[in-house]
Length: 483
Image (cartoon, rainbow, N blue to C red; front, side, top):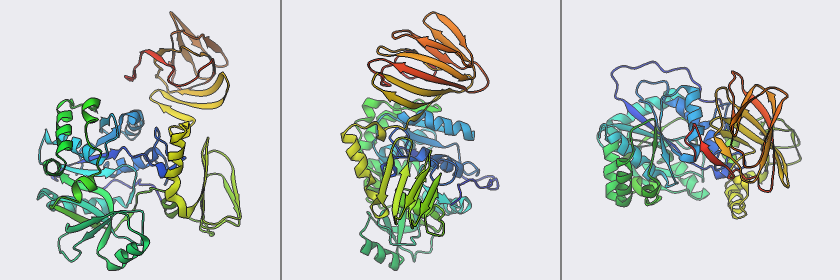
């Protein structure tokens, strides 16, 4: 399946403006080891060359019916989101959640922010980690949903099912209604296979895409009716938010909100709900099975990504991120090789990958949080080797960027410049370090690394000491507001 990089849709004049609200808080545990808590699936390139989040941004980039998007994300992902926005030159606003409270509070906060400008502002709520194309058909369906949303309906978008899928929620609707937005009769959670087959054959059910079109005030009225505690908390939190490109939520206030999904909290209980059927290619890409379905297959029905060689293998998803992977004599399997972990599973057990993640959580394994390559606002670093009392990293600093002024209590550092030029602050002195030169930072020394040049600064860092954790950082000054 090709990425969502379509040619721009023809500009439109005099149309109703819609604020896209992109929900960017998913964790994607079923796509471990690629998806991790600090680098979840929406930032991964799973289908095509672009991340799912970037593909979502593109859906609202090429039509004049959309205002600048409002992106609701976990504060841990701020710099990942900002990097994608900058790369695409999207003028988006960012609303940072201090903790996870599911989709009802996230959408309610977005509605409060938009309602302050106009209670009748239309919001298109979208997950940031789904596949949905073609773009032109999606825009047409949004236009078809406009009359119902303007008439104070909460409008969902449903996908015409093509198989008895047990991993999706379903919507039963009045398909005989002549309107584009049809009355919803009920929402159903993930059914058993026999029930899903009955739904498919009846023609009266759609998959729930998670996309909504609502008026800000209409949604807030529903929250006040069905989830008054969420309404109260979000109203209080929104009153303290200043309208800026990056908006932060009071963590003490927001922590008081119940954690409830929008389907369970609002859509399954409200009376003014409708659905627009979508006859588009769609997937929530929620498991490796879903990735197998959406990735091109070879003659053996294998989906192979990366440097992969197989013999006598059929109907399998095999992915290599950085090295050769070979598989012999297996059918219907998933093999995913990341930088520091390997997953081998039956395709039929793809949904159970989350159980592995839960097991790893209990043992506090770092493999569920981050990859060896970690993004930072100034660049990135990658762990190359480690052992007792030492660690080796490769560090890349973008041109014009610098790390925080910091100190470590438990480790010393030795920096060797591979390419580029480093400006190093070491206590009161400033040192220029060039290619093939090095500098030593003793334990307990205030220091800062900066790239004053016009090309990326690449260096090798050797750490030594009794404790080498990333939390051994005392910051004295930081350009990115980190503490």
